[in-house]
Length: 287
Image 1: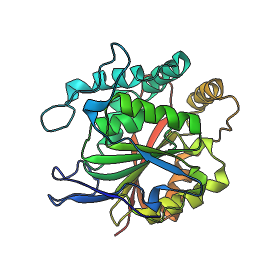
Image 2: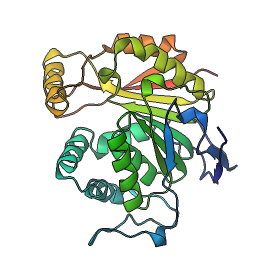
Image 3: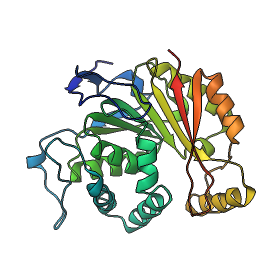
């Protein structure tokens, strides 16, 4: 597949333990094979912001002078992301997802993402979190993949309405992800417990293959302990997606799978007043 390159200037060093970036520009292959699988249909949302039309009363995201969202703008960004979806059922789902993974948690996760370069969102769904991370880090180019074509179409439409140009979406099955290109980081938010267990180790291996040395894979999922929190989460998972299988991994089990794929693994405790056993794995590719 022929690649189309876009240069995005780095804004300086990355946050947290994410790979550092110098002032040199980062090359991003918008249609690279890294983010494609057989039958995938990539589509960037780039284009002139001034040429777009929006629904009556809809206000696109405005930016600060350097193109970044300040902390006081982030809650408003979430509200406007939710407002970019017309379907009331989808909008209710968006509210629920942002309640479970609200701004504080998204920023806890986001501190480990680099500020610039190509980032992969595996199992992006309607594009909620890729839109958030693209809007709050405009030096990134976030590519989301999901098996559901309807959700991908809605994610593309939301990105266009919000005039977020540093994001693109592709219909692709994460279980068939080839990972034969390179991204600086990737993440999966509440994805692992929804895919067949035997497909998880190969997927982690493919993601390891597409990262550079020092590249980071963030996996936010659900622990199996304590049991009451696990059952609470299972009940909500089945209410939101009754036909989707659910299989939670223990912290030791998923940590071992990440290490077997070649990652160094740290855990980040995500304490919540709601009864969710959140756990975040920061998996770094060994040099």
